[in-house]
Structure formats: C-alpha cells, structure tokens
Length: 72
Image (cartoon, rainbow, N blue to C red):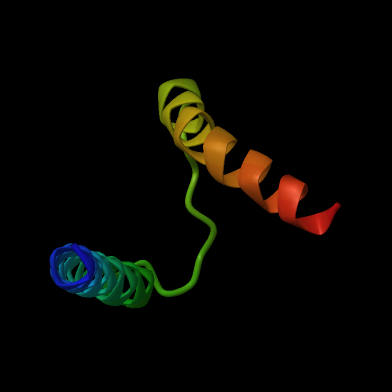
C-alpha cells in the first residue's frame, strides 16, 4: 500500500512540475512579446478604446482579487 501511494505521489509531483514549466514558458513568451511591442511603440502611451479596457479589466479581476487576498 505504501509503495503504491509513493508511486502516485511521485507521478503527481512530476505532473505538477511539468504544468509549472509549461506555464513558466508561456509567461516568459508573453513578457518577451510585451517588451517587443513596447519597443515598437517607443514607450509612448497606448490609447485603448472602451472594449479593449473592458477586456483587460475582465482578465485582471481574478488576478487582482488573488493579490488582495494574499495581502490580508
């Protein structure tokens, strides 16, 4: 029983590590993409229309909520 539990724990840890690496690669790609786009627009202010601001706000809501919960 113990060896089966250890095997499942090992597989779960391996899977979690794989997910973490894939997320880190996606984050690294997006950061690089943002940096390149900032270079293209010469650090000037980007004007967003209402629809673009709304889409960003919807995506940021869970992130902001999570940051606020950590701060408590």
